Image 1: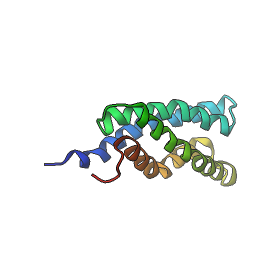
Image 2: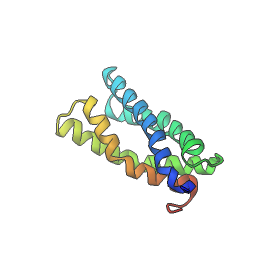
Image 3: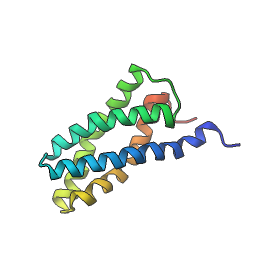
Image 4: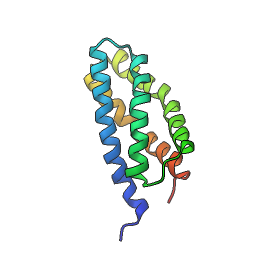
Length: 128
């Protein structure tokens, strides 16, 4: 029988996939509307970060929500903002990728970091 912790990566991919789709839509539509990169990342932090927390609490890790785990989760996401900014800057401005390609590429690159952050913030441990 598959243990609960072994099901988490598959559920994470579902939650993260939904957030990634929403995030890419937000970034692409926001860029087309004229928002700059910093504005886009801050908007994504608030909207997609909170959505991700809810999805990971209820679907991925099946834990009770708490303000403490929300703050830990958002702090981890906040630490990832400079990383996301640099990745998007390199992809879009240095490599000249259109945002329609840069946003999903950055999302894939940040997937592992975000899984570890979510698990640590919500479960307070990486393993098990």
